Amino acid sequence: MSAADSSAGVDIDRVVVALAVVTVLALAARLVGLGTRPFHWDEARVGYWSLRYLDSGSFEYRPIAGGPFLYIVERHVFGLVGATDATARAVVAVVGGLSPLVALLYRPRLSDAETVALGGLLAASPALLYYGRFLRGDLPLAVFSLVVVGCAIRVIDGPADRTARYRYLGAAALALAVASSALVVATLLCVLAAAALTIDQRRLVGEGEGVGDRIDALLGRLRGSTREGLGALGVFLAVHLFFYAPRVNGSIRPTLGTVEAAFVGAARAFYGVRILGRRRGGEHELLPYLSAHAETLLGASAVVVGLAAVGFLVDRYGTGDTRPVVAFHAYWAGASLLVFPVLTEESAAWLTVHTVAPAVVPAAAAVGLLARYGSQGLARDDAVTVAVAALLALALAGQLGAAVAGTAYGPTTTANPLVHHAQPGDDLNPFVDDVSAAIEGNDGVDVLFYGSTFVASYDDTPEQPPVSDAWGNRLPLPWYLERMGAETGGVREMSELDAMEETPPVVIADASERSALSARLTGYESSTYRLSLWNREVVVFVRR
Image (tube, rainbow, N blue to C red; front, side, top):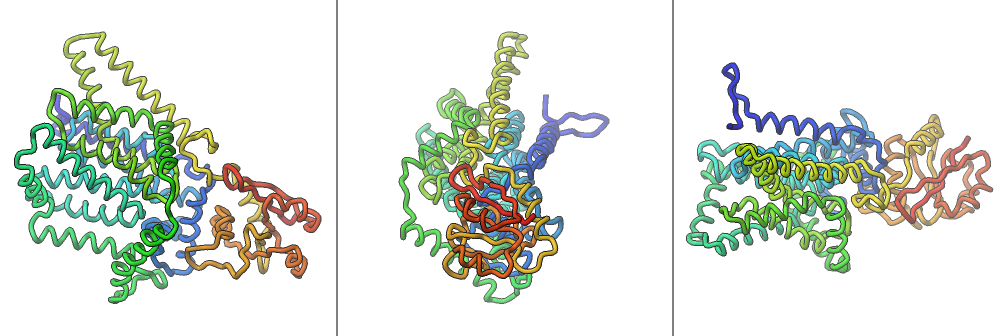
């Protein structure tokens, strides 16, 4: 039976309907309870600087702060609906929630069952779901990268006169991927490695004759006509300019200086910070990063990794013809196991996103194998085959569901393999409520940070990143304080605190300072909060 049925003269594409349902469920899974978990330090950085951009109207690309995509989009979101943990994460949640639709781009190279399976895995893979509810650029980079490859498939396989839209969409997605995260460099290296290995595999299986001519033909298809090629280039440059151009009073000035800053200046800044800066002391040991990456993958996404391995091995060594789309994405995922730990500055669970995203394609191929096995059993009225297929499907679904429950909706503790150490260990809603009530109607400094842990020895009022270590130690509190419009200050010594004419209504210090400050801050109530899973606890004094 085909995927399209006709009822009352209306063609219904069941694959499209199935993916639409999966997309609705994916959006719901990401948007429900989106503000429950307190902001991670990285989320707080993005949220804080987005609020500062909203307030000042000034923005300039700073490589140390990551790609400009989230800052530009968040500024408009905050201006429209306000700033909360949920609204800040909504941008990434929507990108991740819509990701199952990317499967439609891969449809020419996949069966109907594989296409739906691809959408389902994009919706429910634990790493993609957890970091689809997290304010970082990793998930957008992964999704936009899949869109670029999917559009390339459509351009290569489609009729020459109907591929322009995919060429333009792919160019826009490429620009968005570049704007999402500096890790786009690692993604590009993985894609190039995957392409080389896929070509080599074709040669090894005896399909290498005329490979050079076929590559030339594929590149020609991707370029298209001169008009379409220039059009796609124009789309890429326009999107890149929109995100990388500096803003003054919230607007892009139409000058040559703006264009130079968006292209030459941004590239020079990226090279200086991400390349030269890393060469001057940014090295790290490789083996611990590799083992941590593999451990997180197996702990959170074992089902997807296992399915991807089966899909690739059956395609590579099975009796049927090999499919480049399966091999390419398997090699992409395999290359990411090495490339991302090498290039990243920190070993973190969000790196799994860049392995799982390409791995879902060979994983979908494995699900397709299971579907064919079951359908063949039905066709032969083989109850045993059908039962085995059903039990395997239930077991895989159960394991995937358990992984989702334990990670995306699991505890923010070290027991959760996807939780990073900079995730606050306590609920910060009481902090927000207490501080908001205490500073209402106050004139002058609302919140005072105390001690050398949080206050630098020099004037530390950052207008843009980078920031001092002392300011960074305050995270994620600057996001919450900026959100409520609190004016902050800082003193390093008790003598400075004693010299103040009036103590602000809120004082924040390292938890080790609690006893010393309790004697000084009479009339204040104190609470402690864990701002990370370990080694970061603060005491907050609030005037009664």
